Amino acid sequence: MADNGDHKKEDGRSPDIFEEMDSEIGSIDRERKAAERESAVEDLERRFAIIETLLHVSTSINSTLNLQELLERIVDAVVEITGGNRGYLMLRDPDSGELTPALARSEDGNEMPHNSFDLSLSVIRKVAETREPLIITNVGEDEDLKDKRSIVDLNIMTVIAIPLQFEEQLVGVIYADSDRISETFSSSDISLMNAFGSQAAVAIENARRHGELQKIRSSLERQNISLREELAGKYQFSGMVGRSQSMQSIFEVIRKVASLSTTVLIQGETGTGKELIAKAIHYNGGRKDRAIVSVNCGALPKDILESELFGYKKGAFTGADHDRAGLFETAHRGTLFLDEIGEMPVDLQVKLLRALQDGEVRRLGEDYSRSVDVRVVSATNRDLAAEVEKGTFRRDLFYRLNVVPIQLPPLRDRREDILPLAGFFVEKFAKAMKRPQPTISRGAKELLLQHDWTGNVRELENAIERALALAEGRDALDVPQFEHLASPNNLEVFIDEEASLKAMLTGWEKEVIRKMLIKNSWNVSRTATALKVSRQQLHNKIRKYDLNPII
Image 1 (cartoon, rainbow, N blue to C red):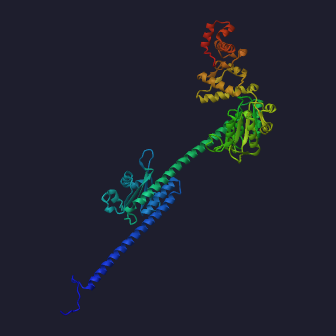
Image 2 (spheres, rainbow, N blue to C red):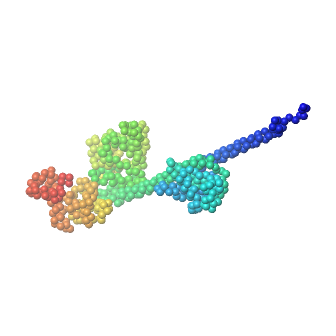
């Protein structure tokens, strides 16, 4: 058979047709793969753009601790990222656990009424229950939402709702919707929105806690200011009780030195009010807005007192497990009140003198000094000049402390102050006990004026408080409330024109028996013999007047 030049394959196709078909199939496959690659690249670019936007938003929301400003940024960010028309944020109330409206905004940043989102609450509640983001880019294709009246009425095409969670607790839900089908988000972006929700929740909690701390700080500042004002008023020397010439002279000294940083030494018997004078000096000077720090130099062992005054470094001694500032540092730019300075050990006096001279302190265990600006006011019930002569107090320290001396007289030497002080304490304790303020009878006044007051003002204060406690709401404090102050050598103080003879005799008898019991060391037989009564009669009187050794 002659060859006609036509070559065909077994399937009847010519080689050219086969090659053309293969070429077309290859071209289609390449185009498909190219399209897939292009789509993948576009998807990556889209996701990278979302991630970049979320990072920018995260930086923005973490740059403010103002809760209102933060909520606005979160809502605006979600609306911008999702391409929505509006956004809504609900926060969980920490007390009730209910979701409450927080903010509603339009895409142009204007606030919207919260009730405009009422029809979207079913979506928000669903997200709150499931704790999972909800992203629906085409509501018309969603079986659960497409027929809902709320969705249809608002012509909503895209819905995005994100739970805000912090430490496994729901903080709130952020919601956005649009009347356009979204081409920006898909279900694959759920993890990204979850991360954003967590970041937003952390920012909200931080802002909330910052706000709470600010409120607490403001409250403390207001209390601090109020306390400083109260203290300043309490220790205004112009309002301190003291009509005697000696106290008026002391007030004049306070007026002159309060505004200075000069050291002041207050000397006087126990109970004369040395600390009160120290506080008056502080609160009437330029340091009144700073602290006044007090320490009793006679109440602490030497080593403890040294660490209290100057502080210590961690490891300086057994038990020093942290660095600690001393009272000199604590009182920086304020006042340090050294009570009972005469009790300070001599070797510690050297270190105190150095601190006063140099204005520097060195903590125990450290090899460098710290500068301090402290006004020192000290007090003692000893005669420091005599202590210097005996060698128990350093002369150089005495001169350093005694720049401005104030000598407080005992109460027995300024009897004209007794009744004004008594009136002041009556008012003070009546107010504290929430009782009407009683008067003081003539007999009681005589008793107060004739008492020796070896405990000075403090003893008088305690006597008035005791009298008010025993008065049980009486209109006047009378002799019986002060009979423990009477002396058998001054029985005339029981004579009171306003009291009955029986009351006066009762007070006299009780005091005589008490004094004789004390004189005879509470021996009933000896006391009965001294009073020329039987033991049984004396026992009856002791029971009647409730006398016992603790009185």
